[in-house]
Image (cartoon, rainbow, N blue to C red):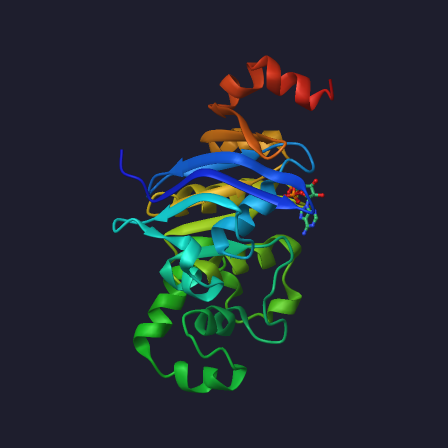
Length: 246
Ligand code: ADP
């Protein structure tokens, strides 16, 4: 199986405390992976290492067909190389329409005024329509983003990330605060997205993870405690002990 991202033996300490401890991880180019683990397990720090926000004290982070090291690259360069990250709080332009938000996301120059020029391009308009279809917001294209529901805003932001054609999408708790129907829709967006790119979902909600039907990595104290299907990892005694706080 080919590899898109390979992290090996990575460690990070904050003031002598090892937040990430000899962690290794790999993901293929069209793979969905859920990362779970109790609070403080190191999930956020691990995502920060991949995006270049936090630099590890040791270990390797190798990317893509050419096996380049992400450790020598700035956050901006890592994003350009194809790593997209979605945080919990959506960062859409609330006073712009869904259409214009998606249009701006296709571009490097994001100043809202540039939208006037971008709207003229048929090619860009088609791309916006296809993105809207991917995230299920075709009927909302002319609405101001600020009027969207919480779930719709989250989907819009996923669409805005997809506009940049990432090869790896990192998503932090995408289902938080959503209704069951919204969760269902979020699942299908992510499953669809993972057909053509790698998707890593950090999630607390086990029912949501189950629906993703993907391999699960359990982090604990900055290391991988278990890896495999959700059924496999939830039967692991170490995982049970950690979740029950033993
Ligand atoms: P998770 O996302 O799984 O809840 P984090 O990656 O946020 O875990 O944190 C892992 C551990 O590292 C925690 O104990 C946290 O307090 C610590 N930590 C994270 N970032 C910092 C930081 N910038 N300075 C000091 N400690 C940190």
